[in-house]
Image (cartoon, rainbow, N blue to C red; front, side, top):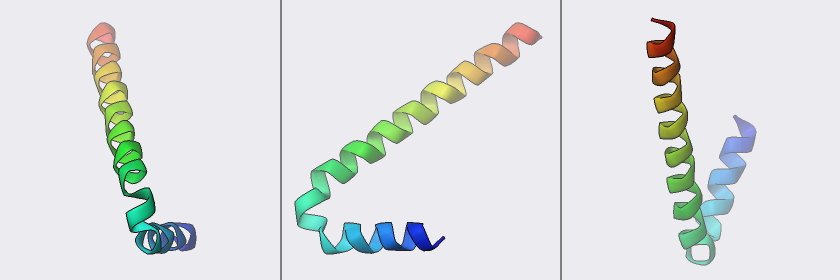
Length: 48
């Protein structure tokens, strides 16, 4: 929880500097989450 708070504070203080990088990491994380979710659904279908 504390690490998340520090990360949010650092992101806010350096918003102009890391804005593009932050959105890149965020979109990349969502992409990985969707990929893993799709894989898990495929595995679930295979087991059925």
